[in-house]
Picture 1: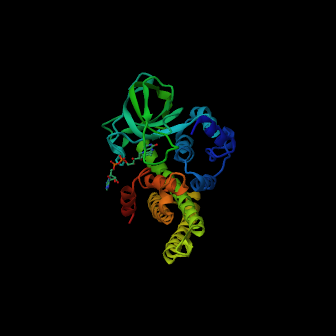
Picture 2: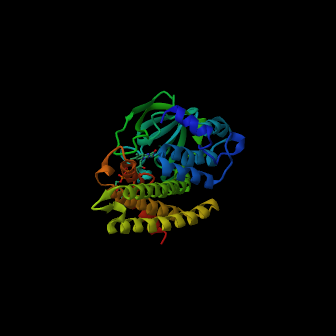
Picture 3: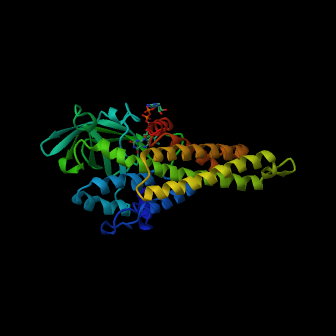
Length: 339
Ligand SMILES: Cc1cc2nc3c(=O)[nH]c(=O)nc-3n(C[C@H](O)[C@H](O)[C@H](O)COP(=O)(O)OP(=O)(O)OC[C@H]3O[C@@H](n4cnc5c(N)ncnc54)[C@H](O)[C@@H]3O)c2cc1C
């Protein structure tokens, strides 16, 4: 996704709709984000846009200083400032307490050393929300978030990683060698990152759930259209009983999924969706997508495995939804803790 694409997204109001009008945004609530996530999920899911608009911007809105907000929010809305968030490292992903990238305070800056892995948008990012260890001995207050500008000396970008899917999304390793970040770029309080992430991860997970439901609907619609058109054994594939039953099962699951999504959306908009409910939503809707995409591909036969058929892309892209933003297993653990 080149810069012209981001600028176009900004021009038509797709980026960071929750930003107040004073910073150039639409001042909308999460329902607007959800409409964008659904439409993008239905057409071509873009995790880079989702992480920018549904995740990164909320950290700046909730914890940024006035100076930080005025400096970066307008560009995030217009598409001039592309953002990444760096939590995962070569040695740790699910266990965020295992983060080893260090930031040592030295005068009026932090000196950062370490590496981050699988970072979405990292190829072009102008601003990186970087989770670092500022005090290894402070337990749950050992992590902080630094706002790292893309041209900071000591920031080394790797090559775009080759993935099993999501060809249109750049994913990269970042390395930091004695990278100096001005202390004024600390986001919120030093040592508060774990608390901030616990507060913001539910929306990240819910955003993945919303897009997954829409992707599942797209996969289903493609299968209906393909099977009604293609013929075998004297009738359309759609008229075979197996196809009708499989599609009926998918239709039923999608109906339940949309109803659940509306329930969860209403709760999230009122600020009532719990962390466990957001995890349950991610677990449910990403697995729904996984099942529906697989059935829909199967109903396409060999064509479903061909890159020229959209279902092959949905099937490949669907797999990661059960991993990033928190794996199925971590979602189950979070739900189980709430029981
Ligand atoms: C395409 C892509 C884009 C990404 N974008 C970003 C990004 O922008 N920013 C970012 O910070 N990260 C990003 N990630 C990283 C992603 O969030 C992590 O890969 C994910 O959280 C899992 O971490 P891990 O890969 O280290 O797996 P691990 O944590 O090593 O887990 C390996 C396996 O062990 C299981 N496991 C771990 N702990 C437990 C437990 N307690 N109980 C049971 N099972 C457990 C996991 O569920 C998994 O099955 C991205 C990843 C990909 C592939």
